[in-house]
Image 1 (tube, rainbow over the protein chains, first blue to last red):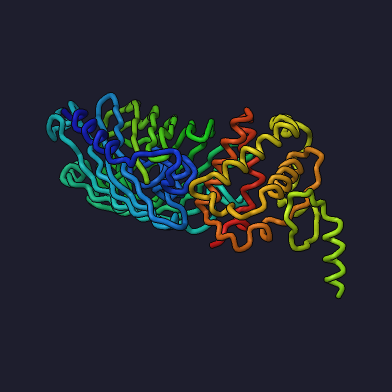
Image 2: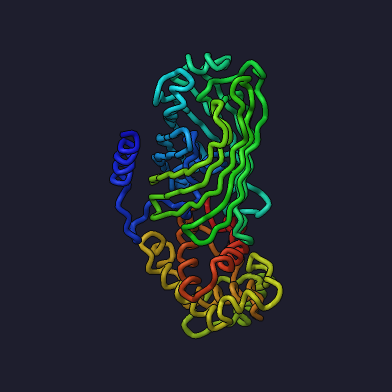
Amino acid sequence: MYFTKILAFTAVILAAAPVTAEDLRSGGKLMLTNGVTSIEGSSGGGISTWALIAGNETSNGIGGSVHVSVIALPDYDWQSHGAAIGLFDKVELSYARQNFNTRDIGAALGIGQDYVLRQDVFGAKLRLLGDAVYGSPWVPQVAVGVQHKRTLDGWVAKAVGAKETDGTDFYVAASKLSLSTSILMGATARLTKANQNGLLGFGGDKNDDYAVQFEGTLGYQLSRCFVVGGEYRTKPDNLGVAREDDWFDLYAAYAITKNVTATAAYVDLGSIATVPKQRGAFFSLQASF
Amino acid sequence: MLLTTFAIIALQTAPAPAAEEPVDPYEMKDSNAGATPFAGTGMLEEFGGQDGLRRIVNRFVDANFADNSIGEIFAGHDQVRLRRVLFEQFCYILNGGCSYTGRDMKGAHRDMGVQHADMNRLVENLQRAMAAEGVSFAAQNRFLAKLAPMKRDVVER
């Protein structure tokens, strides 16, 4: 039932993607240089936020994207969908809804079988300088941004010891495609108090202060439409009852057309809500214009 | 007076095959190519030597003039001269034993109104032309790395 809904949503996205003819001009960005959509709705990789701006338009236009992503884990199903607009390749505004199905663990934790932890993420990103592709090879594209997260199941967050049910992350990100080596590099520093991205609230009994966390990515561009790589993301560990681990993934992103990018990844999200070894598969579809 | 003299000399010394239209005089130097050459012969070999490069340039120029979105930027420009100076520029950058006799990138693109999306379209046409000649993707990117810093001189804000 759950995945049926996701499939239906995916079908809607694909149907909504404009028909692409090779000769029609549809956004001016080079393929894949809009990135894919992260789990938090911002343009990036799968689990990290990058300095790229969503959508296919360049400094002369307004573009956008919609996405749906699923992470199938041994004990949970995590789904995210949302939309972003990119203004003149300068400003990105994004929204994502995350649904985290606790399946049997929900019953074990006493919150209910298949209880779904929901969260809204509102994002804004401003590109400050640089160009991910052009210009000096030594100057990356740099952006700053915020992600305001509001959990819709605050009572669960409070029950596990979170101090707040909404919070705001602040980040600075740098991204560069080194053409001479075909290597894609990215690094992000994030100020955050979020527990498991915010699904388990913000701050906790162990720590209630903002901490700087790091996100990094390395990729290799195999062709105009195909890139493979990995991401690493450090996480706070604020809750005494539920240890939190760093995240890691290995991804392959393929631009099926200029307007549709599919991403598949192996993800290791470590321990989530007392259940360790949450390693599984990430799939994402993004339609952009 | 001095300028006029220089102009006349420049015009007389500029190689001008029959079909090329005359251009305003300018100082000719390899640094006008806007990039330093690769070392060694590997990159030229990747491009199939001078013969392969000539096919790539011709295919690239054909594609740009025929392009639905950027063709109008090229329309009215001297195609014969473009083929020659583009070949020289690429050959010089690939360390293929050529001198570049064209204008610098800023002068060559002045008042053309090139936007970022146009530059990307041009890059795509070049990628297709290189791929058609069997240039590996990694080598395509290495070559594009030489061209990427030129964007600031080509694109008008």
